[in-house]
Length: 184
Image 1 (spheres, rainbow, N blue to C red):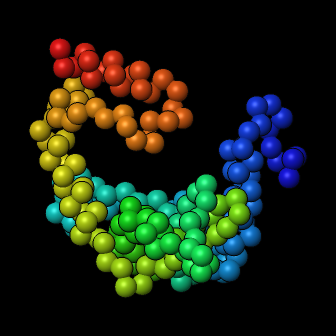
Image 2 (image 1 turned 180 degrees about the horizontal axis):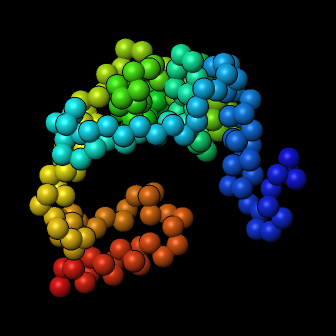
């Protein structure tokens, strides 16, 4: 495995990435022969009552199913060995797959892989399409009201107390500067 890793600045994330990539390679053949990958579809938003087109890009398409791969640091399991349903599948992932199923007209699945585990879940019986369409309508409304990035900044408070700000060097300072300048 060492020959897959960069020679300088090797850390856990590089190693995890290589391990997870190999897990995907090992797990994907169970779905059959790959028909396409990174397949992009753009449809008029009018289908969903939207002003702008909707674009979807799949990970891997097989004859009977589209599989979206999700890399994660770990897959939370209960003592029973079952995956913790509070963690997986993630609601945002389900919404995305419901949209893909509707757009491509094909069943979808999620394949989560961590360095030590994998978990596959289908979307049978899940219908979260309305949720993602409503989110898109909210975004379109914001775009309609806000004509500049400054308008957007004025609409939303800056909150830095979540994990999304970690690991992106300089992003916190950039955001603080932007918010400060816009709100003066």
